[in-house]
Length: 345
Ligand SMILES: Nc1nc2c(ncn2[C@@H]2O[C@H](COP(=O)(O)OP(=O)(O)OP(=O)(O)O)[C@@H](O)[C@H]2O)c(=O)[nH]1
Ligand SMILES: [Mg+2]
Ligand SMILES: [Zn+2]
Image (cartoon, rainbow, N blue to C red):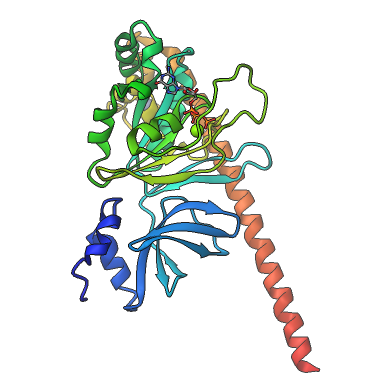
């Protein structure tokens, strides 16, 4: 293939385009195909970043922010294979699987130090990251409002077992560490409660002017400042995805749950069975460690509860998906029969 990276593709390289994806594109055997990345999804269309700038792509198939796509004369031709997707249970309704973003390297769980840190939420986000093949990082914002942010950061790091960065976005503190994590070409997504400071952080890193909001009390509906997900390229390379605040972070994939409990995971390697659920199995090192007081029995209980919840949600989401396929199939059959009758006349 002739693809010596065109200089104009540099902009895509900076947000994660690489040789593997170039090979995937070349394998379609159509030299007219051009790569682009979805930066925002609207109803029935998507905005994508192409080497020449942002383009609007109309589509009937479901795309996610972060998807790499192939365009042919400005039209969507292919969606390239995803390297992981961050998915949660949609709130309300039947609880279908909702994809927050695709092709994400790092998931930043953003929590403001102007309110108590909730370990349960952080663990959920860690599980979300792990099952989406992204590395979790906890970001404690509004460090300027807290007397001892370093102490909190250390406590959270040891409890959750992931890197913790504390930032005061408006003063620029802590941003260098985040830059070094995302540069030169990685993608990170921000998740966290409304008012946690996600958009403020994007603005500080990207120099954008996304709308930010007042911190409002209570938990009434309609208090979100950001209402869509958006991918923003960073000046030094890499990309950051802002998302609307979520009140509940429902899991739909049990795969990442164990890894959200660092102390449990530490001893789980000693279990007799590699797929041990740390419940009734013989030779379970986790149960033994909990009995001996080496693992917090409360953590073990919370881990089991979170996994049961995620398994149930996964079943419901799959069932929903299956019904949707069936309805679509039945509709196609009806349409085909109708066409046949018409032709027969
Ligand atoms: N003191 C201080 N305030 C901050 C900091 N970061 C954000 N804020 C304030 O927190 C409020 C909420 O910030 P946003 O960035 O809009 O929060 P968000 O997480 O994007 O909220 P949603 O879009 O609703 O999900 C704003 O008033 C910000 O000025 C910080 O580091 N220090
Ligand atoms: Mg916001
Ligand atoms: Zn076990």
